[in-house]
Amino acid sequence: MNNDSQQSIILSNLKINALNKMQFEAQRAITNRNNTVLLSPTGSGKTLAFLLPILQLLHEDIKTVQCLVIAPSRELALQIEQVWKKMGTNFKVNVCYGGHSIETELNNLSNPPALLIGTPGRLTDHLERNSFDTSNVKILVLDEFDKSLQLGFHEEMSAIIGELPNLEKRVLLSATSDVEIPAFVGMSNTTTLDFTLEEQKDNLALKLVISPDKDKIDTLFLLLCSLNSEPALIFCNHREVAVRISSILYEKGIYTGYYHGGMDQEDRERILIHFRNGSLNYLIITDLGARGLDIPEMKHVIHYHLPAKGVDFTHRNGRTARMNASGTAYIVLFKEDVLPDYIPKGIEIMKLKEKSPLPQGPQYQTLYISGGKKNKLKKSDIVGFFLQKGKLDKTDLGLIEVKDFISFAAVKTSMVKKLLNNIRDQKMKGKKYKIEVARGVIS
Image (cartoon, rainbow, N blue to C red):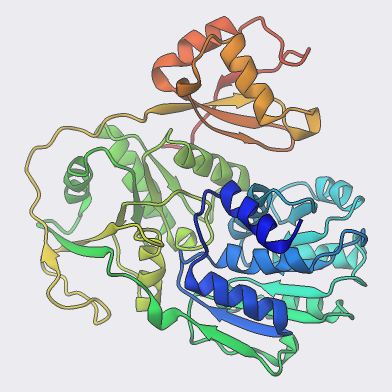
């Protein structure tokens, strides 16, 4: 199969009609140059921009790791893995990150992937254990490199790069252009593609929502009631505020969840599953979620707090108006506060109705299934079981995610009780699995 035919299949798998200008130019540069720096805004499609040319550079006859991708957060690492899997290649991928069992990773690495993705700390750990052979790692990708530097991963990244003796190609990605590349990266004769000035935010509307009270929670409540029950991300600056907002909104009748860096990894992954599949419409989140999360395109981003820096405001807004879509960013501001300099002048002020109906509840509920890939369960097995034994229609099913040892399936809320009754004593592929409504992460 030639490269054009393969790429056409991949884009079809990803439900993408064509590459954008940035992705096309990145593909050409990464394929033909040894050192490429790609600067492009959040939401512009950088992950596919580097994965496509890397696929063309991998060799099927090499059975050890050929490309190493370093990501600053486990969320971004998992997102890259998911994009690769959706591409439908013949090359194995594994992801390594802290917060879960290293034994599972060691077992996966015993049959090495062509593409290995990981966070700096966990990759350093594996290199100290000699978990995988580095002699055939010819390609290094440093994704969201600016964030890795901000988080202080200099030593880990330097140590990792020092263990890659045969590197031929380096790709560095950042959403901002003001990033200095340390000497340990080994970049010389670099080709830089800077798309940060071409950020297409014509599709992004900014609206100012004035709160009469310093505690802006009632204004936020009215704003959510005015969004026609459409999902929204609500950004705040502190973990405890995220929890408090979620709790108060829940008491007022709006089902919400929260996401911040102090949560257990399992809880963080579960809340994102609920949000992705429509079991949760409102997520209160810290700046941890401004980049690197695998969540759907958002029409609404709400700034309950404004960040200290304009670049963080931009990253947050990158969650909406992505690619060719449109979206709105709302700034909730106490009437006596002043907007920071990075906010453009003359923003439209949005008037809220004093009374609006509560948003509708989530269309789906998430079901937990006590088996996954390692139990030889596939998405098609779950679909077939729910349709045949559960007596559901295809339209009753939403997103299904199959992990290593567990799975999650979105089912229309109105059909959950019927499904659970129908499959109570049934076996899937000859085995009885525990299937129940998945626990969420709410106050």
